[in-house]
Length: 105
Image (tube, rainbow, N blue to C red; front, side, top):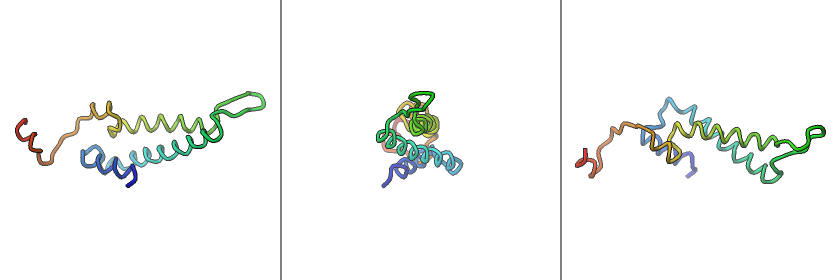
């Protein structure tokens, strides 16, 4: 199973990802793919490139890596994809209560 199926299945079950969020989640997934491609290129070719009049500047792949990392962080927080983000999510649970929940609430 690929990572996005696991995440999306869990997010749907927790009611964090709904039909209204599909486009945003697709952008997140695409950002992850571009981030990983950029990392591979940076690892293979380096994070900087030489320009005739500017000297060493960040490579295009490095700039993509930074931009996609920011996009992933921003969108991922909306879906509770880090421990801190999950702690701040307020999701209403409408399914059947577990054994312990029946006695506590």
